[in-house]
Image 1 (tube, rainbow, N blue to C red):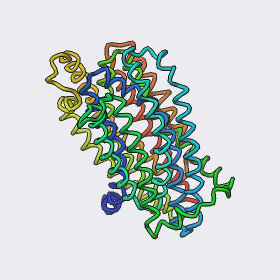
Image 2 (tube, rainbow, N blue to C red):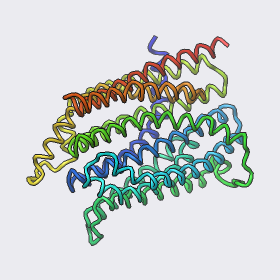
Image 3 (cartoon, one colour):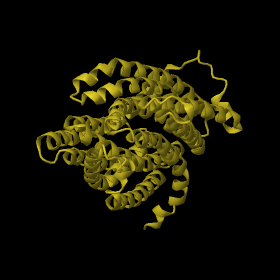
Image 4 (cartoon, rainbow, N blue to C red):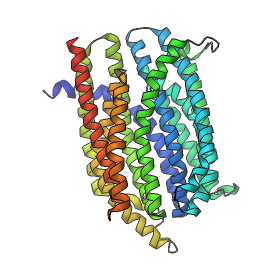
Length: 455
């Protein structure tokens, strides 16, 4: 019985690993920023957390919207229609560029909100200038996403990975030089981290576009664009898929952002602990995101071919692989929850020892909860990927809203601010929302695929 699922593991892993490496690259940028900034103090770490909370919300909309390109390209590829694949990229690139510029403008207009969020004043002062540069980096990032989603739609998942690895190397080098003022460079503190992020994202976009243009199999798709000829039908198709997909990612990222803000109400140390646990959890989440892309590609291909029985079997094999992997991560978090937080702070810093030890203890408690939501978090994002491959996005959007904002957030708010659980209570709410999302999305997938097989 299991063999019909496990025989797909090798190909699914081959498809997913480059995506996972690319996704981890985005998270590793934040990981490097956090570790280096953490050496400056807990206020600086909390400021990066607060600034990035605005960025993550905007990024979720941009990345979520861009995922519409993948199933359209995958379906065109499965049907052998190169012209439709090129149209999906061209129109997707136009929409992603407009969205990136719009999100940058919205973040700049939203900056005054920080003064009304009951956050520590020293954290807000540090966060505001950091936010300007990182907000601008959204423009090249979301344009990069258009090329990335296109490449993945053709099952070519390695090239975006190469671009992301290059961006990480650039980011880490610039962080070291500019945060600490090494080798005669100016010592810029957390502004140096923002400069590193912006530069790395510009290089990432230029590198991927150049790489795709050089390859014969991509040249037809990525060159000779006529931007004067924009088809309303294609634009509408991408918007109808992309807008609900953006909302799905927004609802999830927004509840984690709410956790950052709720933690800030509790103080700078709970906020710093939340940032550590969130950064570690987001790294394992990228494995689920990568498998979700694999599910989206393979389901999109089978939809193009029209074989729904095979579509269901392939998707379920990816769900099973995800379950096994997430159980492994849960065990890792349980075993390492006291050690992982020590990577982020200088435990030998006598001046800040009391703050640092409190943050490490709080982060260990949050990682205990995080160990349990690994399974729910991984499964829900992979099932969502399969549903996007089916181009079923509207009902899943309502499901994610219900799971995160009608179930998860009220629990986080009540337990975090009105009980002794505090930070742990916030994360119990996250666990509840993710679990509800995974269950309801699977029921939707089960219903949809059975209906398609019957018809």
